[in-house]
Image (cartoon, rainbow, N blue to C red; front, side):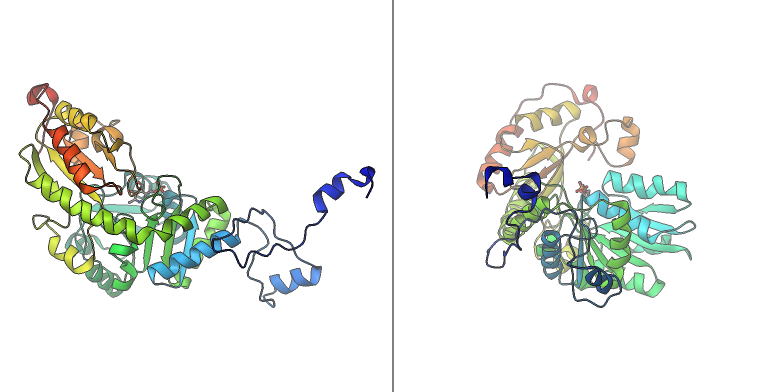
Length: 406
Ligand SMILES: Cc1ncc(COP(=O)(O)O)c(C=O)c1O
């Protein structure tokens, strides 16, 4: 080859044979928008369903890295099929749009991620889909079922009060009444609870949280029987909120340590919840592993661990609570959960500040409510940090600082 042969054509095509990644221990990241065919006949065989080729023609329809991680997620959930999405919200919205049509009714439970509630409860009304928001118990859900109810979507444990609906009874109710049951088990992780094994139809996760586990990616998962996931995958190919290969790789890497991370977070969660429950400056603690939790019995039956999130009410108003949060040195103030770094937030400020106080309180978002998500730091270090932050002398009077609850 002379210097002149180095044309742009050569730069693009020289030496490009198939890349053999079979012997790598890690999942290969394949960045390719289109996927090629050797001939028109190969295209015809593929589109007419005669070939055993699995790779679709275009990255929005499927990507080898993403597919591999989906297969691992399905195996982890103990089911046939998992579909990855660009975010947990892409999973939730694509699922609801795939299954619901004008005239249908959806049941959501009151203690749930705000944007899920906003989309299901308000946005879908534009398309003639009605929603009921009910307390997270099987009894309340059963009462809300109407002839046109098509789906029940609930979080287990719920956000931020960590209620635990009896998934087995709920799934049975769904089967009896012909209603699809979907469990958002982001807070549980498949390590602590596998809703499909209790009979739920579909499980959904914000993989941004424990599954990824390192606060460095945004992704969502839907898992269940292939025939139930397929309609959602089909719509995803049109709506387009797909997971990209690098994110899938990061998720794959995170999944390898899911078990050890969650075990540590479960242990720390229980220790922190017990410590806070005994602390004089804490009004009330919500943690499914505590005997005082209203659904502790259900949680013990369903879950092998109670997770790394602890929610509690500080004895004081807005200012004392903010001062406590600000005094913490290990947990950082941020809205997520489930990563290796501990995070803390006052939900009233982080997600509900746009609402007037009475409206926030109606939703349970009291000014003195705190949600702590444990990372993999040592529990003793977290306890010492909580203790020093709670030693703080009061800077303001509760009546000045706003309503407190508990
Ligand atoms: C329970 C639950 N489901 C879904 C979501 C949405 O997930 P994402 O942030 O990955 O879009 C969240 C986000 O916080 C969540 O907490």
